Length: 106
Image 1 (cartoon, rainbow, N blue to C red):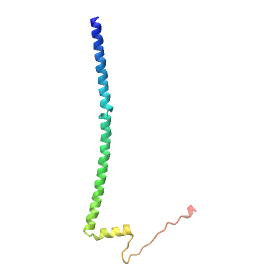
Image 2 (cartoon, rainbow, N blue to C red):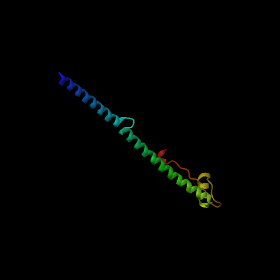
Image 3 (cartoon, rainbow, N blue to C red):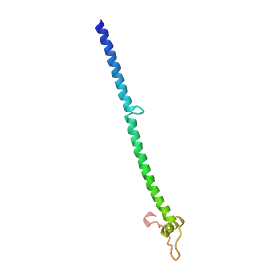
Image 4 (tube, rainbow, N blue to C red):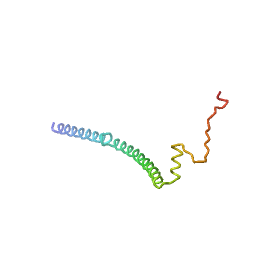
């Protein structure tokens, strides 16, 4: 009888260790600090890194525009006046072109 009790105790211990190991493996994979969470964090990091790179490029463009305007770069000022204010130089002629629907659309 002593051996049967020892066998059952050993079996219970092995089952407990097996369940504990399974729990630890599952928790390691899908727990809040598991492999799945790590992969999700890496993906978010990649997206954020792309956003930072895009913003840095935009900042470089803006810094260049500021530098040109501060240096009173006539070309830069003229470009902005034309694009944003619709201004023209003295002696220039403006041609306004309207789209005319083709006969096929009537």
